[in-house]
Length: 224
Image (cartoon, one colour):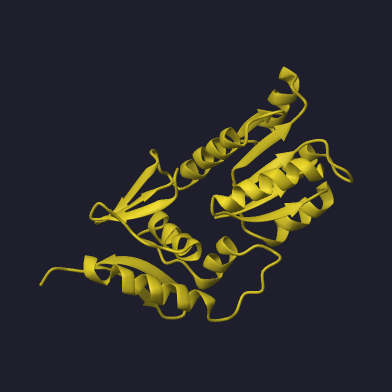
């Protein structure tokens, strides 16, 4: 999952970024409204954490432009503006949630997870595919009741495939969701992770099918 963090305060931005990365998210951090607006033009995100009091362009203007482009990414506003009118304005412009500073990082992450679940039409913290079960809160996968040993990258790939099961997930989409701006991604990185996951899923009659020219999708093996 890839998140855009828009926050001009270095201390708070660092704390949020570290917390999200530790939880397995790829995080891009924009420190002013112009950079945030440009990022949202050129990149697909699973969620946006948006401060309002930003240099160069106010957060509400960033939000207004985003929704004018019909982009439905979940937006969680974080702001020191605690008046009811400010909350109403942010929500009316298309924010999905509003969190007043100061706040606890676990609450921010819980609210972000809830919005991402709604985007994927998931109503609980558990998503199942055959014997696979993804815990979206704690971010781990079990298969036949046993926890699957996955690296953070492998988990990210499998998480996206489970959330989008029944659909083809392109290599480009996987790269966009797993890597942030600062990471240099090799052309075969996704193939390596998919190969490793396939080996781990082999005993459980679940496979990752390559759809030539399009991407990958999860499949349950049909009993003979």
